[in-house]
Length: 474
Image (cartoon, rainbow, N blue to C red):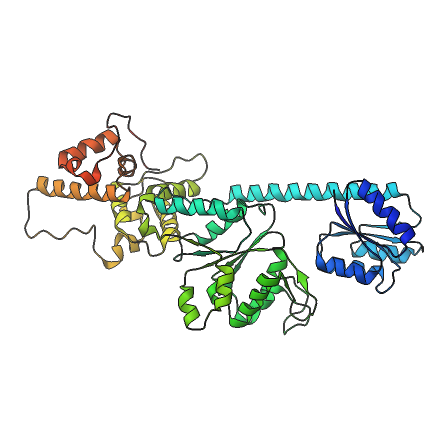
C-alpha cells in the first residue's frame, strides 16, 4: 500500500483513477492543478506522485523537478496525451519512474505501482540488514558495565528510544556519549533509517550552517556545486549533534527553527525543505553556565534538553573495570586467538589510576598493552607510562616505611591493602574481585580469612567459597 498524490486537471480522468487506486489498496490524495500539487508536496512526503504533464498554473515537468529536489525518495509517474519522445526520454533521464501515454490501461499503472511498492520494500529490508551488519561490526555500540550507574543509563536508553523527543547526553569526554546516542537510535523505530553524526566542535564556524543545512552552488566562496546538508541526509532517522555547546549563535538560531518547525532553507535558496529527524545532542560542558555567559541560547537548551542522560565518569564506576577490560581485549585480539591474562601488578596500577580520559583512555591503554605484550600476559611494563606513574601521584598509595620490617609482615600488609583495593573496585562482590585477581572464589575467601577481612561487615558477601574456581581475567 502506497501514499499516492494524483495531479490531474481533467475531472473525467481524475475521479475514476482515484477510485481505482483506492480499490487497489492505496491511500490517495488528489490535486486539480500543478500549484495545488506543489502545495501538497511541500506539506507531506508521498511514496508516488502520478502527474499529468500539461497542467494549469504549474506544468507537470516543473512539479516533477520539484519532487526530485524536495523528496528524492518519491517516485514520479508522468502522464500525457501528446506524444513527445524527446520529452519522455529527458524526464526518464532526470529520474522519472515512467512516462505513460494517454489513454492507457489502468492495469498498466497498477503494475507499475506494485513494482514501486516491491522495490521500496526491498530497499527497506536492505537498509535494515545493512544497519544490523554495521551494528554487529561496530563493537562500540555496547554500553559495557553492570554497576548501578550504568544499569540506570541502560534503563533510560530503553525508555527514551521508544519516543521521538530530543535527548541531551552529558558527561565528561570519553565516557561514551556517542555510544549512548547510537544505542537510542538502534533501539528506536528509526533503526532502519540513517544515523548521522555531526561534531559541532570540529567544523569551521563559517561552514557549520552549510554542513547542517546544505547549500546551493555559488552560495558562498568555494561552493562550486550544490550539496545536501546533514539534516536532509538524516531525514527519517537520527541526527547526533556532538559537542552542541560549540555551535555559534547564528547556527543555534537556525537549529532552533528546525526543531520548532521541522523545516529549513539551504544556504543560497529560499526553498523550504521539510524533514523528519530526531535530534540527540551531547556535550561535556556545563550548558547552564554557558547560558549565563550568553554563549548558548536558553530557548535552544530547553528544546534539546527534553530528556537528559547523564553518563558517569569511569572513576565513579570502577566496579565495571574487569568487564570493560575484557571487552576491549576481546575486541582487539584476533578471532580464535586466546585472550591474554592481566597480572595482579597490572591490575593494581589500573585500579589506582583515576582515568581522566575515562573509557576512551582505558581502550587506548588496552591497545597499547596488547601491542607491547605481544599477545602474552599483560604486565605493568606493558601499560602506558601515564598509568604506571599514576600521573605523578605515587605508586599504590602506600607510604614508605620508616624502618625495614620483616618481609613476612610487609607482604601481609601489602596483601591486605591489595585485597581491600580489589574488593572496592569490584563493588565488594567477591566473585568479581576473584576474577580480577586471577584466583578462585575459594582462594579469595581463604586469603580474606587469613588477613581478617571476613570479620569486616563492609566485606560480608553471599559467595559460597566451595564453588569451583572462576576463569582468569581475559
